Image (tube, rainbow, N blue to C red):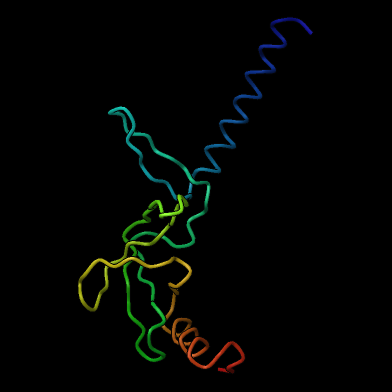
Length: 127
């Protein structure tokens, strides 16, 4: 293989890697970090389970679960140096910002209501 063929092969390989990385990073949770007066964006590579500016429901009632508008994902460091990802939401009943674990938010009132009943009466509760 000549030098020119080698360089062409490496360039093609890099192009494919860039395409792959752009695709992987498309819809993942990201956060900013400040270091030495510079701000860097960190990609967690964790897919976003929910989309910003959508309304979701928290299972605190089986008939009228709390409606929440997802604003953004937050990443915070815990006491034991782990990262905690939470969803910053606008509570549509109180107009206050609240933080929830993304797995506790549901797309429909019915799903949230069913989850509330399962939590209240146990996993084997039939709906």
